[in-house]
Length: 338
Image: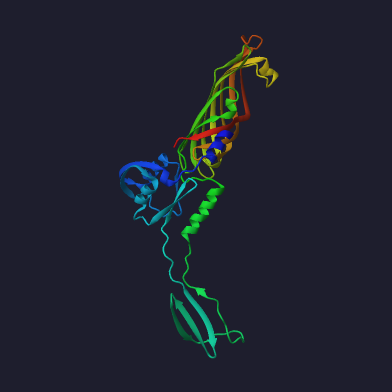
């Protein structure tokens, strides 16, 4: 993993001119075209404000064309321009020319005040009645700007770029992901899972673990475990904190495990059912990779046949247990498909 991260972050950045795209669409919304560009390049789109009309339909046909040329064609007539930095394409309104500032200065002369209004290169003097509160005869007011830009788009993009230098963020939430629980992998089990976004703050996760191996005659960790989970994310799916409601089912054949004398001297074969609550957090590593940790507790019912473990074949009897215990523990490596 360390080698992967080192290669990822030190890989040379490509310019927009080095990126080639092939697109052929007819009367298609811009957001679908942007999705095609994201799938063919390493870039993702971000918007300076939410007024951009991503549903605007366009028709374009290009083959192996520079990304910059394609973006110029797509944004023509929209009133938006683009800036590329750190793997993001920022779309922002075209900066308008600043209006001429009107500088107003005031200075009293004897009984009247003369107000000078400067617009561009022209200056006009206006006589007004004086208004003073103090005994001071001459008052020089600081120049006042009556027209100022409330938002400088270029500065906004500059701030976004500085934030991008500190932490990578992406404009689109992934829809599908596959994963593997590294904790179960360490036991020799085959662990696979999938997760899909189902709402603005919800996702559905399904994990499966399978272990068919027999370590020796009197020691087994054989099982098949299925664990579905509904998740609620505090921010958005695949980002940050989440809480989950999960169920679990397992069919197992365990023997000679060193967790207790009961399990060390017995072979247990049966089924397990349970339900629980979990908490987890997901750390983003890149556009396609992330790490997730989670832990859960809940209610478990286990029913099984017990065998003596000297040969692990001498039947002792059938038993069942109900208990409140940890029902989930995972440290998963995740890859986003879409």
